[in-house]
Length: 131
Image (cartoon, rainbow, N blue to C red; front, side):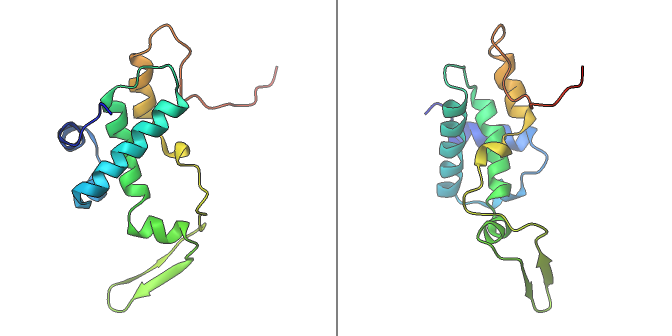
């Protein structure tokens, strides 16, 4: 694994807007987020160069997706409340089988594409066209 926790901390602090969930995670969870982000990108874009910064962008998103509230949503909890604090309702409860690749941010695919000039671009969306 090329991506490392020290590099992730520095990059995310300087380049990611929503970093609260990353900052609040303990070191072991951050390492897991990096491992999953890198493994997912390498598996999905086999044969492409995956820069560390793309992994860091994706790991920061995964920190938000897999925060405490996100985990409750994926476990099927429709809503909950804490007396005197607040009430939380999830619009669409997720499922444990959610494909985490759908959370890869455009910033990560842009970084991958910039490092793989001359190759087919990654991260595009398939759209219907009318001729």
